[in-house]
Length: 478
Image 1 (tube, rainbow, N blue to C red):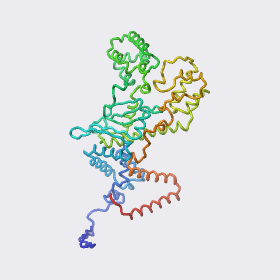
Image 2: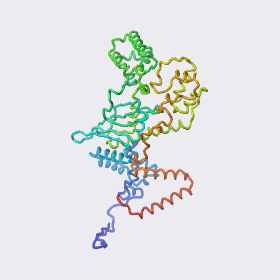
Image 3: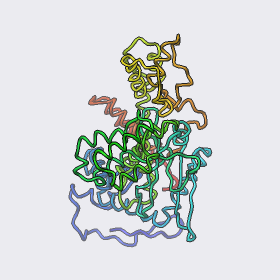
Image 4: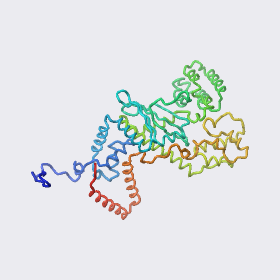
């Protein structure tokens, strides 16, 4: 042991020196456990932090890093260091959790020139009670796909038992798209039409009418058209309902009577006049959003952690949309007829929507009725077989654009200019972006080198040069 004391000027004085060791030396295998050889570097912290976004805890993150660097002795930290850092991060956030997320939102708002939007409420004691936010992409999606929305307030988010309320819709591929998140009563009941979730109705059905009747195939086959059918008009529905109740002696069922009284909230026949309300018959969109969050969410999360995992889920959802846009643009779907209208639709619509249109085209080959009572365009925004037949009988080679809704077209988001696309620096801290870019570039270099020894030696030499330069730098801050 050596003890050095600073005296006058630049003079240092050795005040104590003990040559003998009072402990055993660490073995070669044990050196990595010595405190002097362990530290949670920025790379360690960033890796553990990114792992937490996808529900990977500190222990599993430590195991993953071992695989990346080639061994436990190459990590430079222990699993306890990873766990302590994670616990310390939560302690730092502590009671300032709400303020941390509000500071984050304010920074996002300023860096995006107002394209990121948020609002919040607090109670008399200053406790955060409500929070609403929407980023640039979510607001743009709402601008395009917000004609019909789904809301579900059944997801408990964090250790404070706050309720997550995703506001969702259906995109141009008939997939769930999340606009924003809120805890608030935001809808004007006088200006909106609401409908009950078909899926929930069928889920409750066995417990309400009894297992025996629910298992009766004859009853179910006659009951399902009321829930999912689209061709019955209101008068037909009411007549058929009465006949069905009499046939199965269900006129005294309280639940079925209640369902009949609120039939205007769930029977398809009552929604034919409401534009596009037919595209959302269940709360699947909200359930899908909750499923995304549930995959990443952990009980006891802080509000800050929940938001980070929400962002990860949104990245995944938006990547799926980008992939579907790509496939719609590069792969032209096959047509089944020589109709110019079908070819025009293949150019306009996304693949998912085109195949639904194609189904209507094929239908007219089997059924040449010109009368239209289905009101398919009003319900879901797609031309029905009756309309296609009418167009077929006049000299048109393209679909009239007034029957082609922007919401179902390829790259539909590009047809709106209300919100411009945000850059990556708007949504993520620049520091994290730089670190991730470095990691990606390094892995790309390793991939290019493969098992070529000369290429690997080049990478090794370059890294040693960079490391030597960094050791000579004088850094400010930690």
